[in-house]
Length: 379
Ligand SMILES: CC(C)(COP(=O)(O)OP(=O)(O)OC[C@H]1O[C@@H](n2cnc3c(N)ncnc32)[C@H](O)[C@@H]1OP(=O)(O)O)[C@@H](O)C(=O)NCCC(=O)NCCS
Image (cartoon, rainbow, N blue to C red):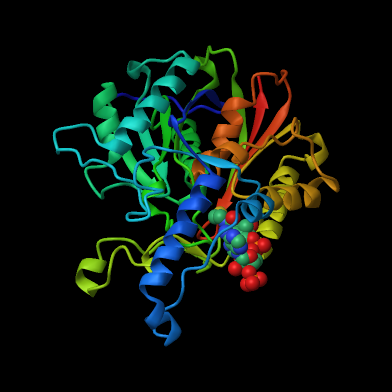
């Protein structure tokens, strides 16, 4: 236990990215779903014709790329996903005394963020694991990671769907600002593939797995090569049923199938598009205005990576034109939607060229609805 000083200047001093080795292209995913559809529809022909069950509809790789900008995704485990007799990853269970899958990927990203920040476990007081899903309720994945790294302090998990990373950075900024922690490790182990309905053409292509991590500390203690002051953070939520995952422990008591389509990720994609884009654009212009800035003054936009058309619409509303890749880098073509990690991947891969005084915006948006943003300035 330590007594810390409040800090009036809080920074991001390093970030890390872990990318799974396995890639699934749109073509592979579509071939699997279409073969599954043929098999299912033949087996259930009588029930489909009698209107008792619905036929499985086929997917199309060209549609996917045009509608989303996604060309491929990385996955933690590829085995099983394209097996038409399984259509979900085959991840071997681990014993309670082994490192959990999610803690393992969290550790990869955490170690790389610590290295980028030039910090060791001894410098960190708090670990936040923040993502769209945790693989269990408790003990917290964050405490498992804290233990594996040998951090003396505290850790907790938090879930805010696609805004989990920015909302956790917001908490880290508050903790360092008020002095409840010297330095905070925020980790986003987005192990999303187990929740994807690979039999549903509307959503089978959307997600990929990844892990990101960020070190937040006072400006005074930061000594890494790329340090970004957090000028401000803003968060907004507005309840909506348009993006839902109902999977959870209640299905045991409600006698519902935990793996049924209605319990996995599903969305009203059109409504999400129409409602979230203006919300995100308003949020960002208001956030900038609070700091007497306009969108034209932003050197780089590290936007949430769900859909290229959403990002283009939001950017157009803000800038009055489409940004180029240098201003608003895209990673979703390779990574797909990695829930909360997308904007942190963009930041991690695209900040090294920024000059002192350059301003960037890190922003995520998604289920909830939720929107989180950080205004950053290169020191
Ligand atoms: C999801 C999204 C890409 C879908 O694009 P869209 O143009 O709205 O597509 P729709 O769902 O309206 O489908 C259009 C048509 O293509 C069909 N379609 C949907 N998925 C398809 C697929 N994989 N292959 C072929 N056709 C497909 C639909 O059935 C529909 O056919 P219909 O007109 O005969 O009914 C789009 O709504 C979107 O960007 N939403 C933003 C939300 C988001 O990405 N959220 C992620 C979580 S933050």
